[in-house]
Amino acid sequence: MKPSKRLQNILILICLIVIIFVVFILPKSPANVTQSVSVEEVKPLNTSTDLNIICQNLKNDMQQINAQRTTLALKQINQQIQICLPHLDFAEQKQLMHLSDQMYQQFLAVDRNPEQQKAFTYYVANQAQYPTIQQNNFEKLHSRDQYLIRHHSQAYIDLVELDNGQVFYRRDPQYLAKIFAPNLPEAELNFVNELAEQNLQPLWTERHLNISANEVARRALYWQDYLTNYPKSSYHQDALYLLHYYSLLLFEGGQKSPISIQFDGADDIQADMLEEIKQLAQQEHGHLSQQAQAFLRFIDLRPEQRLQIENTKQHAQPQVLAQLEHYLGLQRLPERNCFLDAVCHADFPQLTASN
Image (tube, rainbow, N blue to C red; front, side, top):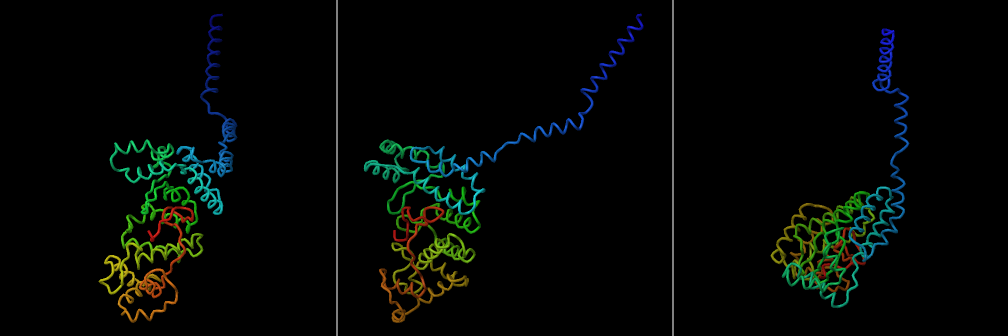
């Protein structure tokens, strides 16, 4: 009996070992693997639904941004814009861009009384001086101004003091370059990126140009080439205005900072601007080079020769400028404000050569 019982125990042990081997050691059957994969495939993250909801509500959400909202809310909207832009056509992108203008204007609006406006202007003009005194002035500001000043470097908010004494908040030019430009067609992308870079700093300071003669010439050449490379750009008229604007700065200067008074010979011309004009005349670089060559001829004309220049139009500027403009074919286009943002605006504070 004992040997028989021992044999039974051995058989039972062998069975247990076989069961353990089958269950835990042998690989799962292909059927099991297939089933496991199929279970994971039926549970993907359904991000398309969430994206559709975000983009459908985006325009309404942008319109809800106002002067009671925080920079955090503005940042969240901008993140949503970036998510949705790749899924929109160009017309819809331009519509969002226009809505973003309104969004920032609403966000940056401050309803100040006269005393608060005075305190705001004074604070910005003197913000780098007398920290202790400025703290007292800070407390006189409108509560919204206090908030925006504390957060002005966030969410593409900038604080600007113009040459004519205007002080205001603006949307930083890099906003459109960073948020919108990467998804725009090539012509519009290049326009926005270039103008954003040009307008990082005010063009005028104390009625003098903030940029070098070389930069004036470079900008004029850039907009000339842009019009040649992208004749069908939706920003064609803006680029044309910028070309003429910088051409006038190159050959005349501003009203308060002319490159010459009489334009009587090379010695009567601002030296650095004359050097740029000479270099441009040698390049034979399109219409600008032709104008540069004409400029060098004009400054050598005798007074009686200048009187022969046809000039039948009435001009508000001095006669010599009217003669110069006619001789070079310079044009004064209706003003556009292209000097504060990465695109031109009709309803933003003006910053022009007349300052």
